[in-house]
Length: 351
Image (tube, rainbow, N blue to C red; front, side, top):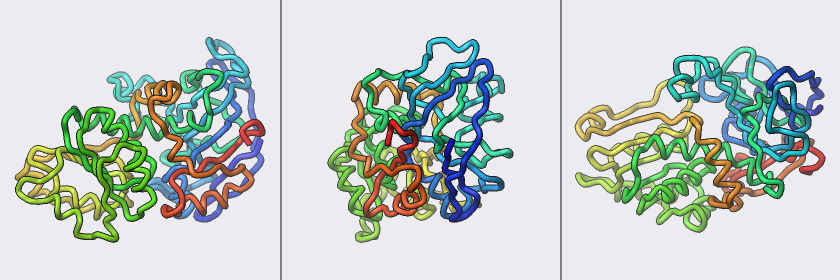
């Protein structure tokens, strides 16, 4: 089979990899579509995501959908030809965090397309993929697998909103209007937020935010660098902030626009190292500053919402490229003025 393999910074190759036989509880799938995530871009452009550096060849990709090819021994409920959402998380199910219902914090997690462990956890930008049976969630036969491949980013947004607590009647700001930020805005509105302001440095994603993702207002912080200050003051504007850009400057800006007792949810992955936090403001305003990492059980909800058409992710899909043009797609995917989400077509039926 063919796969998009990152060998280091700016070194992505379409390599031929060997398949293997299934063992009990495993399923072989033909991957249909794979969305290019910010982490894939970081691995390609920098050779690392946050503190996770590529140390051996790594198949990228974790936002994927596909079709069952083969079910191994002891697999029930899955048969060849079934369409499926493919969960990139494979927690161990046995550690203290898994047993406590916090599988996203698993100490022995295998997450597709991640250099966070050694050997690396190979990803889903491949024609075939072997997964544990609980990672394969069947969807209706008429489901659009391009939309279903958006389940993972939607699950991240749903988890971020869950980390924020009750949003009914709350006023919310989202910094960064990439796919995760836009889906977080949509999820926040669906959770009852009465105001959602989205910020970015490009106008194109802000137009999608206000048009399709539920934002009640937008702010381009590059063309209007003082705009955020209008929301600050002793009685600041927002109850909850989602930092989805991964920018230390964006994070620092949020502490003055949150009301006393408000909450910041860090969703975007910041650069390696430490980031400055105004601790005196955090203390004197009794602000909560909490992380949101991947998803924890929200993946199946995301699949259900997409299968029912309850969340429209089509406005985020900018274009689809064949696997052979993966380098071209990764180069274009970082152009925020032209692209929100690019996908790769990984199997012949998807192309």
